[in-house]
Image (cartoon, rainbow, N blue to C red; front, side, top):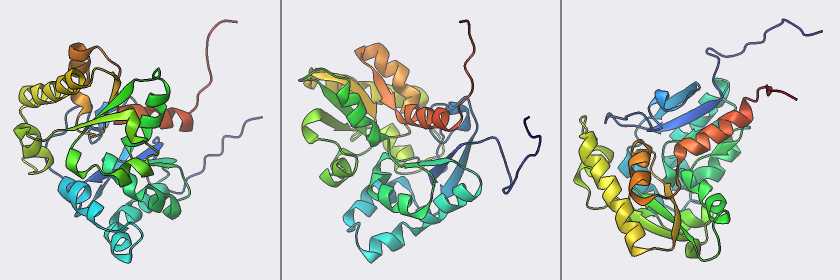
Length: 253
């Protein structure tokens, strides 16, 4: 006999995934991880105060991840993860692929699964490609995506091609300068151009990963241009959500 007794312990309900958000007031259209309507299920966002895209992508990697300075710098992320767990989140992610640098620090802080970075999808994608094919990674800043990031995500450099959104003024105005307006058509054109250039220059590319969580809104346009599988942060969030919110199957026997 099933019990009707409900148990509480936190303030809001119905969510499974908690998302640690970079602080910024730029627009986040559907598809971006900071837009709750990007998912067909509830998620809980928590803004990590004081951490802009530039600080997370460009400043943190200059610190030794084993140093006291690094641990002190990422404390707001740790505090945010603990808050999300306390609010009932059963798994935690972030809004930045570069957060892979403190994946292990977040794991130490909470008791629920953590998948801090979209880069964690690369080994899976690479395993689906035949020998000689590589994963194209479109990142926010190619110069800042270091061997340390790849190592933390268990990525073999020989299995990927990396290209950044460098030289894309519309992307830079929002992602780095936090401008509060966004020309959707212009940034879509920028992202598609970057993707096409990657594939043209590296014809052995078998699939793409959009590292930056601001890029999924343009994934369909990219695929229409290059006709390859295009993966992004939303796939990772959806995968983990469904693992944490299983439902019974229906159908005919």
